[in-house]
Amino acid sequence: MIEVCSISKFFSVVNDKGLAEGLTAVLNVSLLIPDGSIVSLIGPSGCGKSTLLEILAGLQAPTDGEIRIDGKRVLEPLPSTRKEMEDYKRRYRFISPLANGVFTDRPKHDIAMIFQDYAVFPWMTALGNVVFALELRSAGKKRSERSSCAALEEKARVYLGKVGLTGAEHKYPSQLSGGMRQRLALARALSVEPKIILMDEPFAAVDALQREKLQDDLLFLWKEAKDNAAPISIIMVSHDVPEAVYLSDEVVVFSPGPGGTVRNRIPVNVPRPRARTDPEILEIQERIFAVMQYDINQESMYAI
Image 1 (spheres, rainbow, N blue to C red):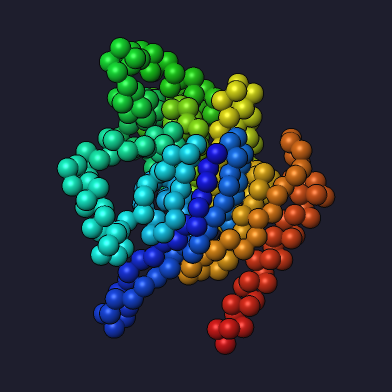
Image 2: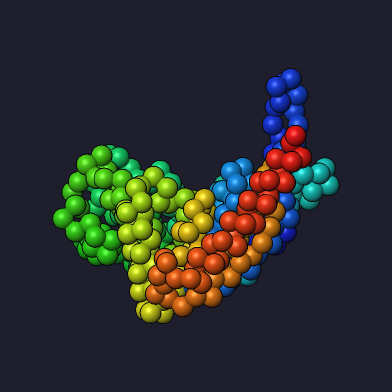
């Protein structure tokens, strides 16, 4: 279970006059995401979707609120007042920030993240990219529990096969198409068998036909994990409403930024497998488009 509890994120930025001013990226967002579900976050650019995703991943701390995964806090908010700073120093006065990471709960180790730009290592082959991810995961285990190099390589080949990259093991990312590079990123994420996959517009850089194929591949692998009693929760940022509705159990619509908040939570209670032309799917898409169009028009009115 993923609990997003009143998350806010504020930044300090320098304006055109060289003065510091506050910027609200996310404001008081609360969500409850059940295990094994697919949830999409959509909304206009700058509404805080990617910021929230990074907070979920533990890549940055919230200013207020907390994220809990299976009851464990991901990262605590940074101190923002003198009293909070004093409490923070008192709590960790004997432990360096680096060492503190060893002692705190770190559920982000069960999280894999897939970025829009693939984020694969260009100097490693497809096989090397997946093996490297597996080696990182096994590095945290006791020596007696670590898999051999041959076992890691075999597992990497299995996951490359799952995403249709059998035969491309020894190719470098520059030798792969955009769709194949995204399949490689997906194989690498799945290979570490995470409980949660976070995706930031993962299919935006590929053409429409490749995009639909990757969506279907993702659903197939998600269902396979669920059938094997190892359900994966997927939280995805998208600007593509049809994609969000087709893939998701719920679509979370954010209000226009800055200071994005949850505008609507729209369940997609359509049985799988789904057809993209299903009237129920199209009706939900229209509802979401109407909400987003209303927000855009209201924003334009106030800007005049």
